[in-house]
Image (tube, rainbow, N blue to C red; front, top):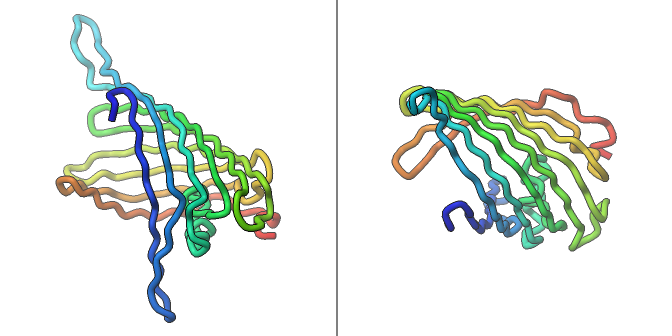
Length: 196
């Protein structure tokens, strides 16, 4: 953490259990650089208002370090393709805007994903799409209630990226640990070309 700037590295891991036993797969190594700021609003007379706004901008880089089994995660949740689709290196510039007032917070996010084939023989050499999201969080004592909409829009070679999802859930903060449970539902029906 460099004050305004933040640099992180992450390596996602997925576990599978079936009749054949249990196994683990490693996803793609992620490097992320971001900067942001938060500001409390001041009203007349220099009094702080119960409202704060903030923004974050950054870029994520996913290196094709994943195992082939990690594709199972990617293909079951298109919102995490760059993390687990092991054939591609991906770059994701993004921007986030948020506002917080009393027990409510809202967030808007827009990111562009460009994926370049590096391993194997995937259907497309390059893939591009937009991902947008809008969320509202309400704090109810120690529980956060969350409602979120996520949308995907194909730019090129991404026929599966034309959907909208709704997620409802909750989060509990227990010291340094945050536990969450949610349900994601598709709002749109995938097109026939997405499964070809």
